[in-house]
Length: 353
Image 1: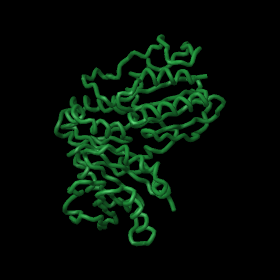
Image 2: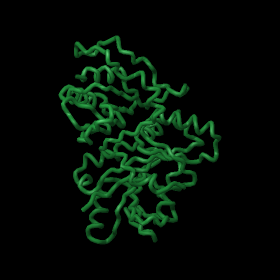
Image 3: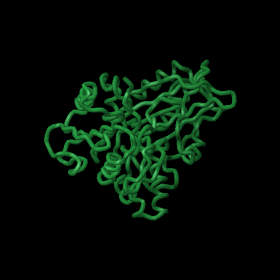
């Protein structure tokens, strides 16, 4: 049986997740979408859509979509949906999990990597975060959860842009890019967005396409290793690297705890050293590393190596062959909470050939 692409829909309280979800649930798009509302409180997706009961329930929509409220264990809900699908009681070919407005999407994403049964039936497609353009600046200032939701995103949908001016939208976009340069940003007022902006994004796939905001890369250009860097010893006491730039690009006045940085180099990595270093990073900083992803140029390899991770869970895959025309280089992005950028960069440079 084909793996069921799964989208985690997140966003802060009042961002517009419900509006977006209701539109998807009622639209004639040809998909049979199951929706799990990963909920611990008493509020459900929409009182008119879901029956108010305390146990898990499944409600079928007239367009073939299915709603299921979970007040408890997500893994159990995932298993129950598969059991009902296999028995022919319900049918669905996509899954959307809506988290609560205060949820950290990290543990939800990890479920698909740590639970064997979930991994057999579902494939995490993307984390889609709805951001309220009217209130996001204040929410990002005051709530780490809002920053985490942005940091985890593969796709950001801006809602309520009609309530702010274009300058405010531009400032917000700049801040979002600073927190997460790998998520593309689209407008989604009143839940109006193409279904292709929400489903089948393949943002979580290990593939060779590392999407990074080009403006962010320009601001980061002077961070990556110069060819004249020295690498004689393998301890972390180099003082001569030119990596002093702060992460407050775009002259932002906001010092978000969650931010991103990019590392680029055109020198190949030593496989053994890099494995050892990344393993150590994940052990020490894993809880603070929200998302990380990269295309790697490895010594003696004619193919790209793709890696990505969520917190302490990291995976690698062999990508496409390097083409004759493209420069061989590594590009890595790390998104996390107060990550010691200097240690990461100096350590990565110790791993170069």
